[in-house]
Amino acid sequence: MQIGIDLRCIPAEGDNGAGIPHASRELVRALLNSAGHDDAWTLYLPKNSASGDGRSLFQECYGKNCRIVKIASATGGALRKALSEHPCQILLVPSGAVALGMRMPVVPWVHDIAIFDHPEWFPQSIFQRTLTTNLFRKGITKAPRVLAVSEFTKSQLVSHFSLDVSRINVTWEGGDHVLANLRDKGLAEAKQRARARMKARGIDNPFILCLGTLEPRKNIPTLLKAWSQARLSFRRRTDLVIAGRDGWKLGPIMKSLDTAKAGQSGINSHLHRIETPTDEHRRDLLLAADAVALPSLYEGFGLVALEAMQAGTAVLASTSGALPEVIGQAGVLLQSEDTDAWRDALVDLIDDHEKRRQLADAGKSRSLDFTWENAARVAYGVLTQVKA
Image 1 (cartoon, rainbow, N blue to C red):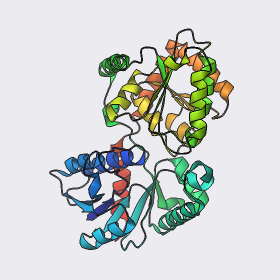
Image 2: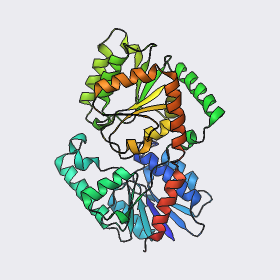
Image 3: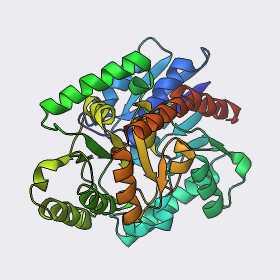
Image 4: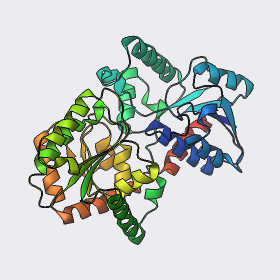
């Protein structure tokens, strides 16, 4: 079977990206490593993404029945041209955004549909939003089968588009394969090395980590306010690290950062902003943190929560979206905008080493249920069931 994968979501010029690009790369890696020998794969990749994630995909293809077709750009027209010259029998779209004019069966992988409930969180104009949401709706409703990253996202697809639940398969995600493979003594040693590297970067104190692109749905102002209050009650000095690239609609977030920095004497040295962490730096942050805090207003899956559990780090998260589904009983779950609850939970967790250890152990154990191999198995099963 000739299976195509639309990888127009991979960023250009060596940027590894986050979120969907990262998940797409990991799913492709697992698919190529576990699929049947009789299958042929074609990866449609914009020519200007031949470094970073693009380069790693070239390496994944080596020695397999796989080819990479470089397309002129990330537009639908460029993809259609490539498909006419290098056809496939079925197309997987890991970004979930199906291009117009596809002549073969297309299976989208949907991460979230937050834009339908909260358009105010996104930077698009009304015209752009109408165009993109209509295209997305058309691609989802025409697809013979749909993959979703969580049961929450599946329920949202059913609710918004009236899809038959039998057409939707949940893959979940697999997190970070490096962190996932750290166990017992190896994990303890990795955490020790990560803490040493964080000290070399100037973060000497224990710290709470908030990791992810800065955007409205991440609800960072609530965490900043809660930490600013909580740090007066910590029995030991505890920093806050906000790590992740700048996203959109940053005004309220930056105002909250400035308020947190200026609100108390000496706070500048205890609030850290890391804008472009590499994959290695992300792992160090997750391993070295005393806790990872995710006060998100919406998460289609909750990849950072899973990565934190894989790193053996205690997690505090909101009850929004798929976070409870991913974390289960292995973390502290709070209402997203209850600042007082977040403040009290931060103090309770940071001052209780045994509780952090118990949550870390429970999280590591639970994380074993989520692997890219399992996600690939579900995706591959769906792809082979759809008739061209």
